[in-house]
Length: 63
Image 1 (spheres, rainbow, N blue to C red):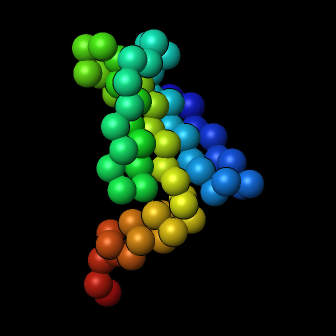
Image 2 (image 1 turned 180 degrees about the horizontal axis):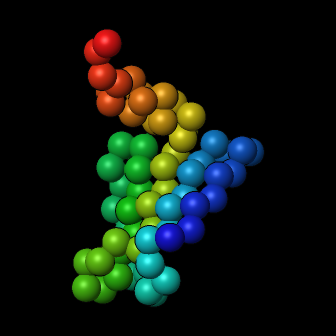
């Protein structure tokens, strides 16, 4: 798995496979790229700072 962050666009990229990409689907601030067999290849998280902050708040456990 490869992870890259692009500060100029605030985009986080998770490459989970090196298979060829056939199509993509956008779900809110996440774009998932798939193979012809519907296997996820790449996740693009747009507005990554905001997304990660919301994820961190949602996963915090109460003390």
